[in-house]
Amino acid sequence: METKIRLVEVDYWNYDSLIDLKVKESQKGYVASNVYSLAEAYAAVASKGYALPFGIYLEDRPVGFLMIGYYPDLEYAKKAFGEEDEIPDYIPGSYLVWRFMIDQEYQGKGYGREAMRLALDYIRTKPCGNAECCWLSYEPENEVARNLYSSFGFEEKEKPKGWDEVPAVLKL
Ligand SMILES: CC(C)(COP(=O)(O)OP(=O)(O)OC[C@H]1O[C@@H](n2cnc3c(N)ncnc32)[C@H](O)[C@@H]1OP(=O)(O)O)[C@@H](O)C(=O)NCCC(=O)NCCS
Image (cartoon, rainbow, N blue to C red):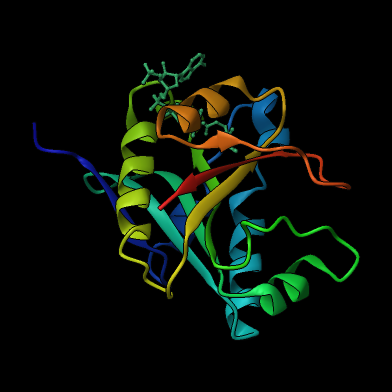
């Protein structure tokens, strides 16, 4: 079956329609708003850092948002996290699925799974540089996200000191 889901780079012509996408009220604690994520992406790129934001499209219709990060080494990770935070050893030399959401109107139709598959295919091309693994994190009560990620092979890790979210790691 031909896939209808596509990842489209965020640009000046589509960012507005991605900001309009929203999760359910009950899911707001699981993911930052898209406008916040885009501000963060701008700041990262303006600091010569790494942020790759994408719209998730069903053919020509925006249905979600996904953002990839990259940690080339420990020095970058320390700057990004702050010197005080514990940095797990899988983070230097890793990609991060930084943000991931499907708009409330389009959830539960398989689009999230397909978008994650496309994102991991892209990450495996190592677009920013070499890496051993990909990681992400989720709120402990976010069962839908946990099950979806584990079905792609992400293995849950211990929560580092000071983190609210649970990390999970996939070897690339
Ligand atoms: C997590 C999220 C991106 C998944 O996207 P989606 O398009 O709804 O997911 P899919 O339809 O592809 O379903 C993926 C799997 O989750 C399951 N699922 C989806 N919604 C579910 C629900 N409300 N309850 C139980 N299972 C659910 C599906 O059955 C499917 O499992 P399967 O493929 O084994 O059958 C979406 O729910 C979302 O945006 N949630 C709010 C934000 C969020 O939590 N982001 C992740 C932060 S870490």
